[in-house]
Length: 116
Image (cartoon, rainbow, N blue to C red; front, top):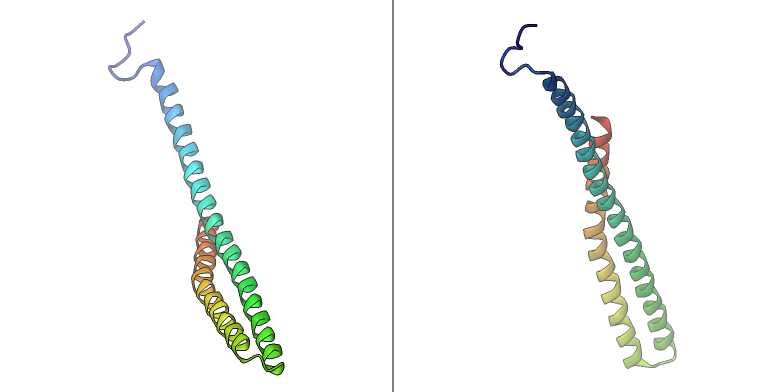
C-alpha cells in the first residue's frame, strides 16, 4: 500500500462536504435574515400607516366636535377642538410620510430577495 500524497487524506473528502454544506446553510441563513428584516420593515410600515389612519380619524372627530361647538356658539371650545383636529391631522400626515417609504422599501427588499 502506497502512502497518500501530502494534503490528500481520507478526511479531506469529509471536510470538503462539510464546508460545502456549511456554505449552503450559511447562504440559507443569510436569505432568512434578509427575508426577516424585509418582512419586518414592510409590516412595520403597514402598522405605522394603520396608526396614522386612526390618528387622522381622531383629527376628523375633533373637526366635527369643533363644528358642533361653533354651532352652539361656544367659541373658545370650538377653537380648541379645531386646533387639536389640525394637530392630529398633521401628525397623521407625518406618520404616513415615515410609514409609506418603509413599506415600499421593505416590499422592494422582499422582491429582490425572492427573485434571486
